[in-house]
Length: 220
Image 1: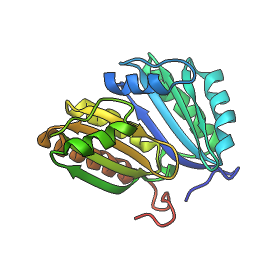
Image 2 (image 1 turned 90 degrees about the vertical axis):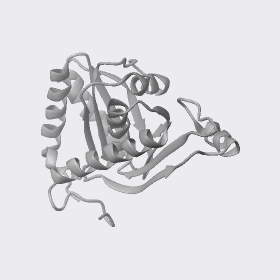
Image 3 (image 1 turned 60 degrees about the horizontal axis):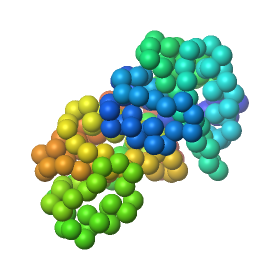
């Protein structure tokens, strides 16, 4: 893995150019700070160790007109969210963060698709199980679900937004902290298949930009 001079690993660096309605509403549900809305531009940066998010957020906010819906701090990793109406401000904030780390975009850890599953025409009881953990749309009997797991975790947010941009499908749950990020979306068989194709294509495009050693231990 590539580390900064201070020993910080850039696990995720993801620019969401235009937040989609469901995705923005989902962040509104989780927000601890400024509420994002559909159409704004967003930056997601996940680092290790976790406390590195504090000086990086400080540098970005002092240099750019960005807001934050909050920082998510856990034992090993820290995630910062920044957003602004003006995409240029978000891009600039990203450059400030990279400069503070002394890293390039290619030094971010390359995402790895851990699992990718399409569950066709779920039963009523299975639907109820998914509804127990949902934070977005309901699942209904007969829905087809696309369930994804990715590492590092925070890439799942960018994937969710790209899927909503590409296909009319319901976001059930997005969990982007911890070792793995998890996404559940619900729709028709064709919509779930398109969601899977979109996710795989995005991961491949990010991996193509990574340096050879910007990889998690044990990744492929």
